[in-house]
Image (cartoon, rainbow over all chains, first blue to last red; front, top):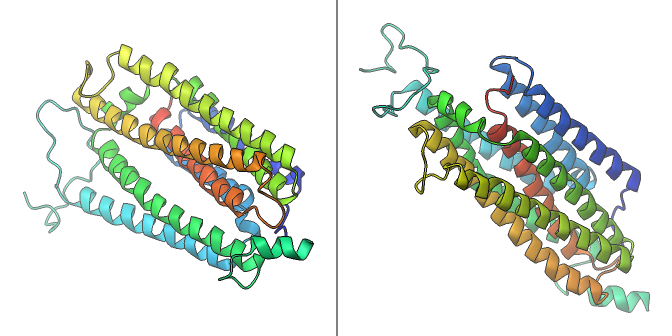
Length: 118
Length: 214
């Protein structure tokens, strides 16, 4: 009983891919994509994380139970971030203090919107 | 002989070694799920304040050294490779290879922490970028550096814990405690180590590459 022994070749291939993606994400920061820079950086990070999880952490060869745990973690993370951000960005909850430079990324109040009571 | 060895590696509450192995991995995966929530709180806070104070976050991010950040990412990825190879050596019962890869992983982990301390945090402090101590730039930049020090600090703390765990494993591996029937400790430590690597994979673009460098 020694579990699934992964061929060395796979590890080195994943390692090379991770280094290449690190170089790519750094290089992409020097290309002007506007707001898409962040999106591209996050997509590359997700690809790298997937490679690590599937091969280095052996999830590809693990029982389904482990995948359920990971999926539930991702689901809770999605709930945490999406529900918190929707609240913060749809209501004026966070007053900008005097003298703080802020970005006006929040949507302007829609006429008659119930979300924005001023 | 093989049977008695297998029997001694098997705790009495498990049916067989496969079940014991899966139970150990499942435990670590569940712990890692709680860690996702722990870091998730930081990432959620980061997302909100980054969107509220994007100019300050961009200016703060541009104070960081991308080259050192990228090189440190590479160091961490190397340590993940050596960790994966250490688990493989344990599975195959190669004691010397296991010891060598554990040492390599520890050295790479320490290198990451040392670079962080000496080239980054110390440098930031000298530049007057330590929130609450000597911060000299704008308020929203200070907020960015609060997130920067908190997130990289908590990540580095996880690395220190990981190095400690690997140190214990190294002593046990030296004594020849691991083999094809008994490598769950190495495997679960590996899961933790790779998870810490994944956190950095997200921290690097989110902290160092905000707003691009063009």
